[in-house]
Length: 288
Figure: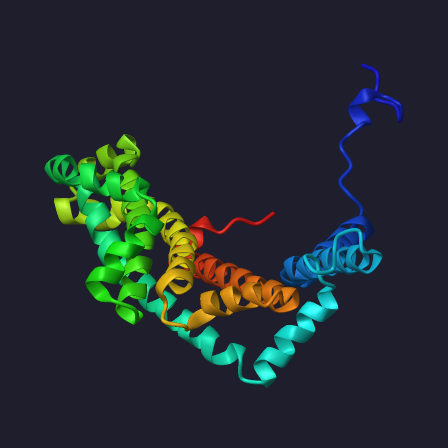
């Protein structure tokens, strides 16, 4: 019998990575993981810097009439002076307070009612026509009626915010319960889960993304309702009033400044909801 030589296939065994190569790979992974938490922040800062730089260049070139498109530096100066002079601060506080109260009321009503409608066919049959009708009804059409009933003031503003935000929350919660994977329900039944355990251990965790999505839509709709109320019947208070006054005075830097503040409010609330979802449902956290 011939003995295998050095070039024989029997001696070509797999050779693992060298220790040096493995150490370099681990070092690279550690370096990447060390800076991973700051990646989104850096990308956001660069993105906004490029956006505002392009804005400033276009405004300085006067490609658009400066009356309609001011320089971003003038806009930031208007925001700074507005806070320094006490013009923006009280109006911002008024709007944020009403929006937060309205969203809390909307969530307190919309989440349980939506979950109940999704779980009960009878409740769905009775309430769905009203919910869908109010969901599709333009909120601005309700302003004259609300002014007649509630007058000018916070009561009318809170009502229009709630009417704007509560129905998207209801619809999403209802859809979440209706789309629970049947295999999960069967698995719960196999393991002997009761009705309450099935709801708390299976249905609610599955529905949580729908709840968060509904609240995010409620934030956007509630912000629109807040602006409509302040523009048409807010009693001369809030960011909507500030926006309307800046438009009447052709004060475009202040007008754009208020729009930026509204965008910051909306994005801040939605990011807060994403953070809360990561806390209560860490299994849904996605890493890219």
